[in-house]
Image (cartoon, rainbow, N blue to C red; front, side, top):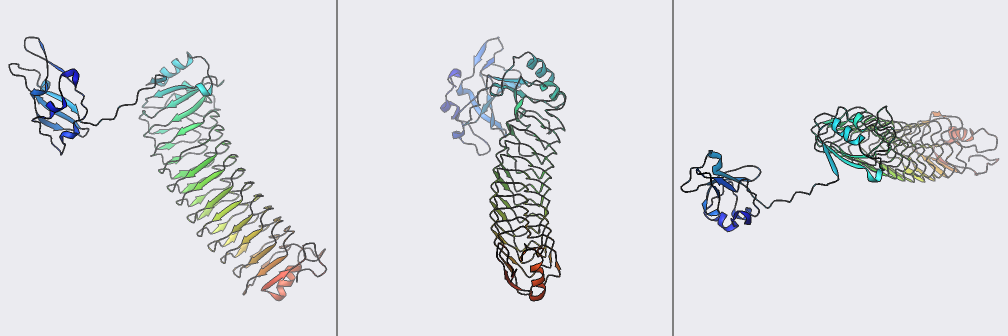
Length: 462
């Protein structure tokens, strides 16, 4: 303002502001035109005293003010107006001088080829303002991985990153991509989009993305964290499979489906939050996540696949919310650190091998709606000392508790009637009885508590 010789007070005097705007709104000003030209060719500075009335206010807060200069005929008519930006205005962030900006992938390719080799720590910062992603892999492709790039696509108008867009191990792939900010208008991430981008350490997924495609981040071994926005509804098969350094993930409530092997073999994944909107978890979704210590399966889950948490060897705590209806085959197979589990009343079946080899499992509560305990469901749970079988159970399959060498007490609840009692369902009671002693005892006495010596006994189960 001082450059124009116009003060804030002078501008406010005699000015009527529309749309409820007050004089206080005029804190900072930017003038589109500081001078006007007179009929004799002279240039005249526009002083505040000649600002008269407001002719309109736009949504951005622009105010058009009529300016008159006595003795001058100012043409064209639009010279009669001056645009003022009503404040307070936020200062723009200064542009990073180290960011290179391009509007075509061809220009990026030419520039990148001329640059010297670098490292992930000194990755080139590139901003691309594109209307099409075509050619991006060719532009960034660098099989030797010696020119590393951090890519900003936030200003691009494309609505998604297509299938195999940055596929790292594909011929002409982009293993040198170390970070990416996706286009702000993205609606999805296609299959194989970032597969095997082994140096990709950070990714910003904008709100608006509704799906993460099959193997989208498969094998991104440098990725340590990922934000999944609350717009995502589906995480497809193997989306983050073998992201071996991914340390934590929060799956928002908007997600309804987690695909098969979605996070399989994410061996550093220590923390997982599964949102309350998830209804389906696919086979082996978190299998072999060997750093995972605890997990809660929300009651919204109505379909859960086989071996979902198999070989999660650090898993010590599992919470299964009421609403889950089945514990499928091999779900916690090999979870050697799991110490206790409570199966809610909503569950009707425990699948075969469900807790196979959970050698630290010392306490199990089986819900009152369970009808079937599958083959080898608790096989080899060597720390388990007691079990209570609710009256709802009608089938105990072969080997269900076989190999539970510390199991010395089994209680069958009042009203128990198990017509399908498999062989070797429980450890042997009497040396050499083939594990059928308890089955025989139950066929006679039904409900009640049966005990045995952990080392075997000539008296067997009693």
